[in-house]
Length: 296
Figure 1 (tube, rainbow, N blue to C red):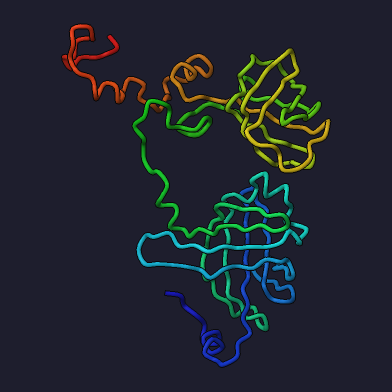
Figure 2 (figure 1 turned 180 degrees about the vertical axis):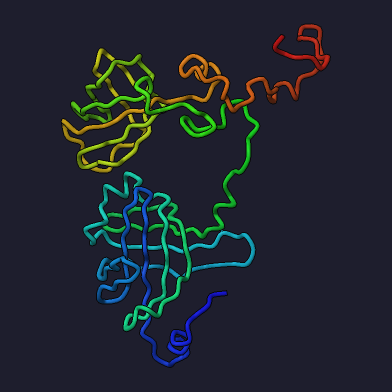
């Protein structure tokens, strides 16, 4: 139950009120923005909440229990801090949003209504809409260890232990050209073809600075690399834009052993019987089904 100050409760009980909504948005890269549906800017908690940004929100739905409540924020790309390229490059994915009810005549009287996370973002010709998920959505995420053939760890995380900052798994490059959805870069070091497939390319300068994209294909010829991406960058790519590349992993035990020399930290179960073993039946041509190992 929310605790309100006596003065705010009195204003809520009054016939006419002076309340508006404010949204504090915090991206994962540390950028913080404020928006309000009031007709002038408001400032509190060290954040300026900008008016006339074209942002509006639907009603907030919440339920008892662990059901995921939600809402939606929609707006036009009319605020200088909201750039189409940032939306397309995923910089707002997973951002935290605080929703406040504020007395615009006295901002000290305010109440935090909800804290949400930005989910799916849909873009129209000149507007966008962002799904706001309640904190209960965290309970929908997998917890604990998964029993699967492939590795359950993410390359470079604490369970994996591979240092992606090492020169053997990481390099920098400069864009030579971008045509037909394919990037051509000159790298600081040479790698074998396919080494960066499944990895990440992060722009460190240019209009897409900060965007992290997944690499689909990688072909190497000396220091020149041709990179195919699963999706195009949100903004224009120019020759000379700097980028960094990180190795990819297909989560197989052979790749873990040969490419990263990290089989001791492999988090999968490659010897786990599959569905073919479950539906198999004894016959004279098959291996003995006596409960022993299939790999000895």
